[in-house]
Image 1 (cartoon, rainbow, N blue to C red):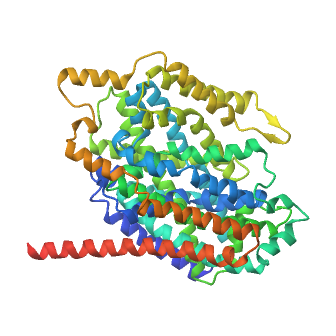
Image 2: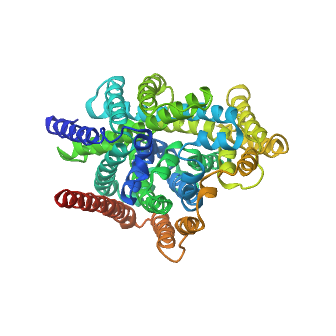
Image 3: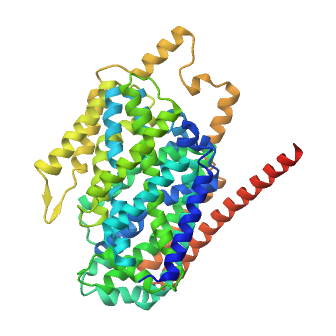
Length: 569
């Protein structure tokens, strides 16, 4: 389906991106620069890397496949629900991450619950960093674009991801994420209006599907209540997603990370309209779903793009996957070297060089294991939900308690919560699955409340490690943590940074999301085609372009200052 021009565009784009990554390799020579970009990511880069890391193969290709069976309900439940439950992450949790979590979840667990809880949590997080859903998406792109062997394409793209991870660390990853993010949103959104109006818009949706599956055109879609609850719970999974913690910790201020994610919500919501309505279009072209919907989606888009633009689309969509893989590989490598090995060595830190080397070796291991397991699921989102369900059941309760609960938290509470969650998940996943009609209830429905109950009961026993350290530090006359070490003046500035400006930028970004949700929802339910076919993709393109232009102005401004500084010398 691709021609020589498209292939040439793809090769040139990836060569340019590799050169960009290589240019940052010399600056990523210690752990702080390699893993946290020296805590210097500006707002535009935070938006780009958050967007590209979250909207990946699963977020685009996987979403399209899932929507072919869910219809409008995917947007009303999955999209609106996903972003609405994440507002507390942006407003309250994120700004505190760089102080309490230092960028890694295992470190948070170790501080609050001890080494065992931290090691168990680290292992689960490393498994989730395999990103097997993304690798499956790569295979489907290869089949649709080149009719190539999916394993061969996966090997090539995984090698690119590992290369970017090993070369430049988080700053290089963030900058290439920005490029991928821009191409992904522009290409996917630009081709949508033509596909949407060719099938007759919302009216065409109803004509094609009302006699086949009328529930697809309703807000709730006839989805069983347990499945709807699981979808929302999976949305909350991001509260213990290691890459989000890494991004917030790398932002140049708590306020920057907060506003970057608030900006992302409106882009995500608009982009969801584009991808999810495309899923319905795929279903219309294949009413009985006789083909793999993810593959049919790629073919449908390529058929509607001219030569050259097809290459840019493949770069954008593949780049979205690469940006997610290199993000998780980097994060997983950091967890292995700076958390797991650190604790196994008796809390003796590795040298910067050794830590970075282990992270690079880990990235290769992630790629090999992910390739071996990626195609064991029917749909891409089956893999995503599987991993999210496992990690959510074990880690959500102790992680959120560690970040947000200021009261007593004991080592027994954290360990009990994780172990009970793990046992419950294994039992209801493999030993005694619960089925309601044709729907098999996800084990998270049982494991999460049991994990919370175990935390509450366990909190009556054991040692409050935070209080113990505070007592010991006070007796020795030393500071315990960042909050204790800071002056009153610094704390005043810090509280100003994390304060929510409801009458200001923060409030405006929240209102923008609410307004867009109402606007798009009205367009879907009342068949207002211009809202869905034109407004949604144009809004996604405009916000994305604005962020990208802001990034370019920051780059040029930095270059001018550096040049002027050099002349002054």
